Structure formats: structure tokens, C-alpha cells
Image (cartoon, rainbow, N blue to C red; front, side, top):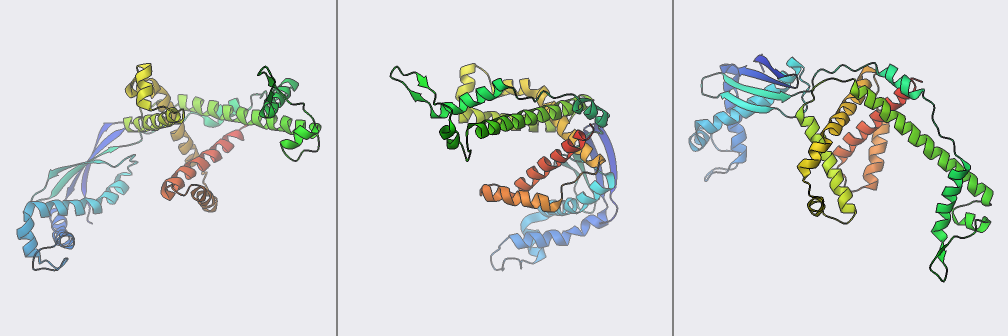
Length: 338
């Protein structure tokens, strides 16, 4: 494909329009290809499929139809060249508008892209260091252990004649019902370890979220509406699933509380914007610090997930796991700021 004449118009910091002009000679070369593609798809009386002469196709479909196919072929070929030439970071397929489409004329069209605006991150290492070095309260008290043991004993509770719950005695026999424990002391120690691990995990997740929220707060940019709406769609989908797990239909629930989906989307918009900023920040930190997910690690995780969930789309599983694993590597990097 020869050089394309292009003009870039910045509509906003999140949207650009690229006006494109393909010269007559280059455009006309697609005429034969267009007729060939059309011929492969149609069947006409007296001709085998794919063997209809060009002049017959021209008479049958007319100039306008063939020009449209030439335009499609041209745009398919020049699109990657336009992306490379202008280094477009598109977040969705562009809106295409044909400006001029006529025989013996240059082909003119425009591409309008939703793009990720230029984003400058705050000093994320300094922010992470400030959060990650804060002391964690992960000590497990005797009261914590006792509460956990009571909840576990409730699994084997009985009822007395008055219908009152009676907890079994915590002895070696009961401890062994929960696993290969020699005695109560060993079982209690395992409960203590589990509580400590749970508290440490919660503390780590809390610090990770605090770090990313502070980084997101330092990003001052107007995000494309497309990204925010996409996040709102995901939030609404998860909300619907939660409602249905409780045995209700979302529509019935909304009717009960006298709200609409649009009400929730308005309420969630600020949170959705923050979530998008956090994900953008995670991606930019990964690029800046050259963090990657090894292919063998990703392939292994995808294989495990698709084996566990036979109905999952492998391509979507790959995309989702790549993002999750890369996010984890960013979090581990930020935790080292301590």
C-alpha cells in the first residue's frame, strides 16, 4: 500500500479523528480484488460459484456495490498502516465515515478513535513506600481463637429438649473430626495459624488497595466515557449475579426498592472511574518497570482454568489471567518499596 495522506484532528484529549485519502491509482487496484471477493460469495444461473465473469458481476451488482467492496478492501489494508503511522492507542474499534467514494476519484474517509489520554502517574514508589511501611495489626488474641473454636463446634451442635443449641465438648475426639489432629492442642494451634494467615492476607489486600487508590487519586485526567461505561457494565453484571444468587430477579428487586439500573449506574460512576484509573495505573507501572508474565506460567494457569471450567472461552481466560497475573507482579513490586 502506498503512502496515505492523513490529517489528524484532536477532538478532545480522549478522542481523535484521522482524515484519510487514498490516491486514485491505489484505490482502483482494488477493483479486481473486489470482483474476486464478490464472485466467491455469489451463485448465478449458468455459472459455477466462484467462476462468474467480471463483466457479468459488474452488470448484476452495479458500480456502487463494487465501489463499496473496494472501499472495504482498501480500509482493511490501510488500517494497520494508519495505526503504525500515528501510534494510535485505540481502546475500541473506530467509527468509520466515508467522505468520498466515486469512480476515478481518490477514496476519502475518516476514522474517529476513542483513545487513552496521556496519563502521568504520581510517584508511585514513594506512595507505596508510605503505605507499605505502616505497621499491621495482625496479632491473634486468645479471644479470636476462642470465637473461632466456638464457630467450629457449632458444626456439630445438637438440640436439647427445649430446642436450645448445645455445643459439643472440645476434646481430642472432636478435634479429629476436623482433620488429622492428634489432640486438642494441635487442632487449636492450627486454628491459630489459620487466623494469623487470614489477618495477614486481609492486611496485605488492604494496603494494596490503599496504595492503588492513592496512586489513582494522583491521576488527573478525563477518562474516555467508553472505559467508564464498560466498568459500569461489569459492576451491574456482578450485581445482577449477586441478586440472582439470593433467589431474586434483578427487575423484581429494583421494583421493590423503587430504583432503576440507571440510578445505580449514576451512584457507582465515581467508583467506576476510580477502578478504571487503578487498572490503567497497574498497566502503566508494569510497562515502566518492565514487568511481564512468563509465557509458561500463563499457559499453565490457562490450562488449569479451562480444565476446571469446560465451558469457558480460552481466549477470554487467557486475557483475564494475563491481566490478573500481571497485576499481582505489580503489587509484589510495590510491596518491595518497604
